[in-house]
Length: 186
Image (cartoon, helix red, strand yellow):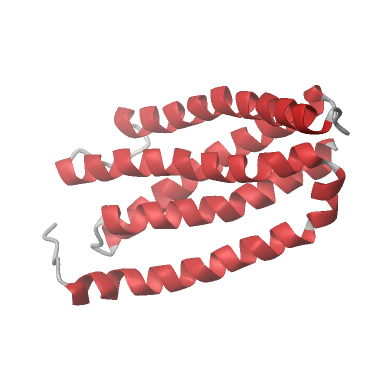
């Protein structure tokens, strides 16, 4: 794929994407605002918000970078029997399953150290963090695969489009999934 590195070409490719992503992020902020009372009631959940959102976006970004590299090397296929594609998805999920329990425990410990007590048990925070992390990892894989495939189909450079899309969508999904799991377990 030949890339046209002019200001006009980059603007034409990125401006619509960035405008849509701005609206998506606005929606994320509105959702976050609607859960303000629950966050103030359970400060450990408040600590989980930025870390969960950031980690989900980072997982998607890592996967997007790997897929983009494969795309540029010409080794990327969107076949379900592609070992590289499946291996990257499994590695992303495995990374999430190891990181989110640490994040949950860290959120509980930080809340305990700053306030002297917590309204939620460490088990509850661990369950919320692990459940939301597992769901977000799966969603990040799906979003990353979809964004990469769409970029490929439209002839866009995945380096320019996929990572901003994945990180912004994972921000919104991070808020939604975290609060959905909090509603279930808290």
